[in-house]
Amino acid sequence: MNAHHRLFIVLPLLISLLSAGCSSLLNVQRQPFTIYSPRYTAAAATPTGPRVDWQLAVETPLASDTLETARMLVMPKPGVLEVFPSARWRDPAPALLRSLVVQGFENSGRIIGIGSSASDLRADYALAIELRDFQIEYRDGAPRAAIRFQASLLDYTSNRVLATQSFTAQSPAAGADAASAFVAFETTLNTIVPQLVDWTLREGSAHPHAK
Image 1 (cartoon, rainbow, N blue to C red):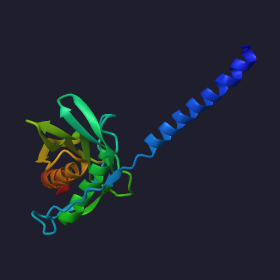
Image 2: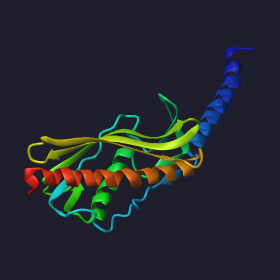
Image 3: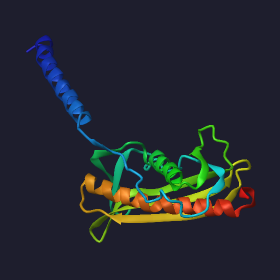
Image 4: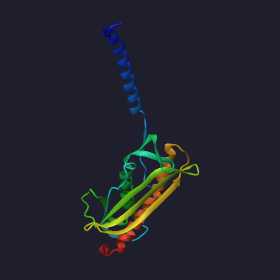
């Protein structure tokens, strides 16, 4: 068999393999997934403390590249992170947390002005957050939603840190699936956000600038 004939035999084979590979890639990309959008439902319609007369800008939380994602993360064992392949958050975790924190302040009814640092708000203070954990963790074989971050209250004009506090909240998940993880995350968020709101309002009011 000469080279010309071998070329005619090999070319159809290559085309077939390439077509199969492209089809496989397209199938992977088309895998369906569910988008989850946590709601802030903490009971905060009635103010639980004094109303403040200052305004606050909430910065987008800082996070590692791993947490800067819309993927729902799970840690099956310490130091190992995986994802729920069929689940996504509506926004990357830092942006999602910022949105719910702003909503928490709004629902408290205790502050006259609240918004993101990108808004035109004439803020007196800024709230900076370093997001450290936002995942499902397994403890003694049981899954739990875990959220951990450090918050810093800053003077908006000078950028001087006025107070810093670490926050942690965890909630058990009813199962190992993404839907159960979502419910656990929502419970955890509705626990940790009001704690952050109360701390921020208390620390801001304790500073002379707020008086």
